[in-house]
Image 1 (cartoon, rainbow, N blue to C red):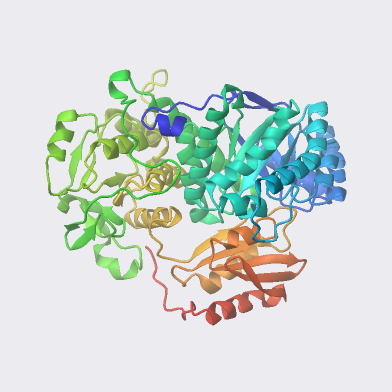
Image 2 (image 1 turned 45 degrees about the horizontal axis):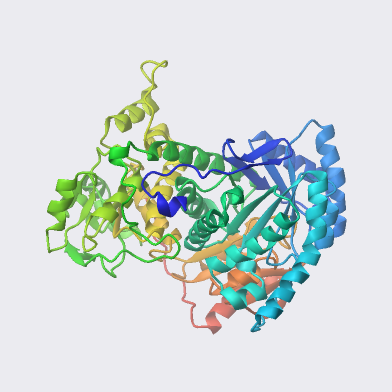
Length: 626
């Protein structure tokens, strides 16, 4: 497995090419960017207009939901209208529940996405102990339902995505494998084996979840399983964090999940799922692909710097926090089972010291210069040995002049330094010459446009707040720090790519929240809008946040329909799910408890439900982060 076998010198996973219309995915192609339109599929003109808007901003593949045979049939008119207008972007039909809709859609589009969890199954949350014979009979039933689509796709020369969602695993999979990354992988492989038996190979995989840790582990396990199956199982992989939500939090969560895997060389096409207009997804996805391109190119170091035999400093398939010991820095405890702390430079602390009472939860906890932090080059064996001879734990980090990507350097540090030493994570390295040159170029432009330094760290090229691009800073920090946190590495974080101290503090805490490392505010799981959505997700999400954002540590899921809703409820305390047009069902965990509530009353009823379960508090005066 590439991400487990080469955590210090990754290269992009080698795959076959799968053609989606005119667009090649995998092979030698760049990472492809996709999105999905949000209007009703039966509205032909709106579907054409939204698709063309996406193509105009750089979307390379567009997905359209086909919830019924009637919707699937209208794809003929949408595709024809696009081609008549000169738009040749490939169209993907998104299928859930209805094989008949898939068969109709496959007549008109370049690719069909099916979800193994509901293509031939309806989820009932039933507990059934399957014997091997019963399980085999279920697989045969699936083969009968799936084979016609595979044959039609092969005949027409179109592609397919076998896309597992954590929130919609079948009862069969749940009862044998549980709600686990292994269950997600096995669900997809069952369908892939049927396709291969029919000599159909134009498919890609996906393993999507709203939880970045689950997503990362599932994709790594998928890559490992495909490698075990054999060299001809080299199918491309589509990445996405589903139900990421909106705004800064959604961009951070997407960067953690997608960015981490791209850094490991896993992923050939990506979709960033935002509860916003779809055109806003494309700049985020393109930036993540660019960051990953720099990281993968930089991660393969010369042989003498690449410890191929080094032990893995983390479990690639299951989250486990690195077992450091607790120490105290300026009255704050860190390491061990303590909270992951937020560190700032003295200069940043001085800028906010007069308004700490207005920072609310975004507090600086440790000042770097006063923490006695030991900075080392993890390649320096003598320095590592001196550190490891210390019986008393010390606070350690990577030196700024180490010419390695951030993730690579900290993984190497965690592998070589004794585990009792707590580690401080940095989002960027500021000290080496390439970083300084890139930062100067971002402000002034290069002195000689014919010769420019090639950055070895994605943060070198893309993390410059001096260029005024906070999105790039945010994505770089979330990718570097967030992915390491999901590896279980890190006892404190220091964000320096963002120079505004208040904004850097907010970014630090939001990365910890999105990685599930430190929950300090309300957590929202919100799906992107699509043609299945039964209410306006953007306005509804805003109303729910306005009513509940003061509930620290409460997780609320906002789902436009039931495709993933019930499954994703398992990760949330409460759920707000579209049940019918204008009607909402409310959930506690994955159990629906209130049905067919008029949409106008649903937010108030959600608040009542939170009160009933003892998790409501009255809002106090909010803090303002300046």
